[in-house]
Structures are given as C-alpha cells and as structure tokens.
Amino acid sequence: MIMLTKRFKAFAIDFFLTAIIQAILTFSFIILPLIKNELNSPIFESFIRVFIIVFICYLYLLIRDILNISLGKIIFKIKIYDNRTNSEASNKQKILRNVTWITGPIEIIYYLKKATRLGDKIAKTYVK
Image (cartoon, rainbow, N blue to C red; front, side, top):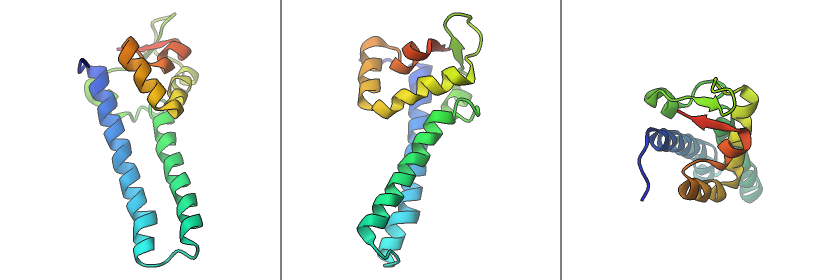
C-alpha cells in the first residue's frame, strides 16, 4: 500500500501540472492545426511537434528543482538535501536526480519497492 506522504503528494502535484502543460501544448500545436488542416505533412509535422512537447515537459521535470518552481515542493514545504552534508543539494545533484525520469516506469517501480527514488540514490540526495 502506498503511503501518501508529503513527498508523494508533491510528486503527484508536479506530475499533474506536467500533464496539464502537455495537454495544453498538444491541443494548441497538434490537435487544432489538424482540425484546421494547417499542417502540410500531418504525420511528419505532428511527430516533430510531439517530440518538442515531450522535450518541453521533460525539461520542466529536469529543471523545476533548480529554479525552485516545483509546485508540489512549494506547497508541502519540502526540499532536496545532500545525504553527506545534510545541506541543500547542489544544482548538479538536483539535475542528476531528475535525469532518471527518462526511465519512467523503472523510477516508479523502484520508488514503490524502496520508498525512495532511484534518482535520489544516484545523486546521493533525500527529500524532507
């Protein structure tokens, strides 16, 4: 059973925000142009646009902690700390811990089994 910790709730908020961003971008740059028949090569242009939208969403997940724009962490007043020093994690650690989101399901399965993120293990960080 998943404990709905502050950390998990913060993640859910950030994930939901990312989904909203992706939905808005998809509707604006793929669905509307398809409806209006504004794409010259619908398959190719749609593929490129999907790639850009996914890149933008992943970029948000990657840098949100550096810019302190993680809405979930702001709401629940949690931060990322260095395991060794117990001080706030460096920007390098924050990026390193979020790079693992590219593995998606592996990161989620690891969290469900270990109650910590793979990214935190690699970056030597914790959230509190």
